[in-house]
Length: 114
Image 1: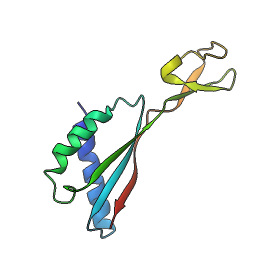
Image 2: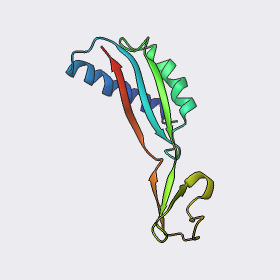
Image 3: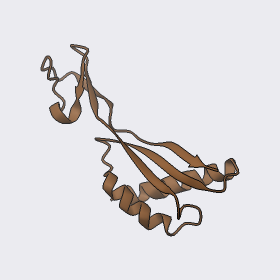
Image 4: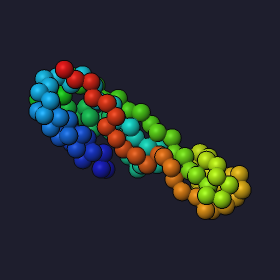
């Protein structure tokens, strides 16, 4: 489960930003997680509870997770469609000439800090 490593990466990144911007407290961290990123939001939440208890700065910090839907683009008919529902084949023209536009991202979207 790479979610624990991911959580520690977020903690390290935010700690560096705290030093860089002389921040004392982080109220919340918002993560964007793509629907097909391979990261399971439930595990992120569980591992966040574990990891933040072991840190100095994040014991009261809330983790917010926003799921980004997977969208695929068809190069033949120039339309997009929901990846999870239709997969790689375009439901409009049935072409396999497609690529993923969004949905595999993993980003720190927002940090609420003082």
